[in-house]
Length: 70
Image (cartoon, rainbow, N blue to C red; front, side, top):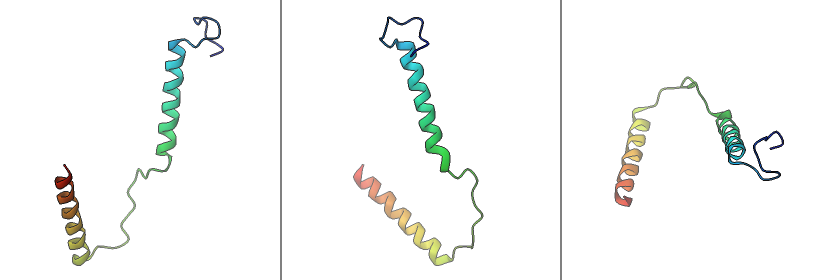
């Protein structure tokens, strides 16, 4: 860091390194969240009973697969 007054010459002090890492993490978090939908869109249509039953079967299958793998 060029404004580091507590460093020893050209070496990067721990405080400056930590501050730089925090800024980098904050930038990465902001970049990651840029496209996240924070408001749920309105559903276009209601699901049929068959579609709901299919989703429940798939979720049950995933739960069983996770238990077998654990």
